[in-house]
Image (cartoon, rainbow, N blue to C red; front, side, top):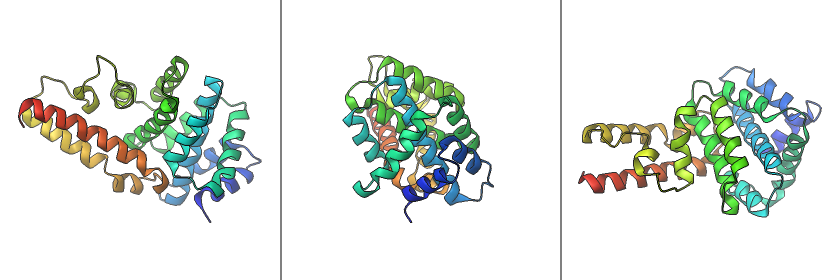
Length: 229
């Protein structure tokens, strides 16, 4: 059975309540890795649905971006669409979903960053991250306890004049060369796709971790070139 069918069945088992399914899985022991992978994906779908509701419209580009994030096969899209639409219609606000995901990965902030990266990937699919989407993303980051990382996360996806490789790396420009090297190596270790799979991120979403690592590598290459490292 595919993860998408498992997700659809899990939601059905809780009276078509996406939040109830997520809440139940979140309460299971951390060792239940398959269940946590399902919960991660449910949370990602639900938060994406609530973001779409906040924006007021779901564009074809955003749907395609979602398919890219999760590598969804065409025959599985009906399961995704079902959970997406149920989450969009539920009266519970996005905060409830964000709190459940934050609880699930409370000890793994890198995984929570994966969720933020996935949401940014969907938000920017139509070529622009709208103000209402940016406000939504910043609020979700705050619930995740990532307020101090939000500027860095944003810089990986939205290029602005004030954004530079140091922001992407999350390190001060005045840092010594050795500190830059050590910080970069830690980022590479922490963001290796295998580590994210072990933490409960579904294999279908590893493209986001790979994209994140590519942004880190690109930023470091720029800094290293400037410093002659």
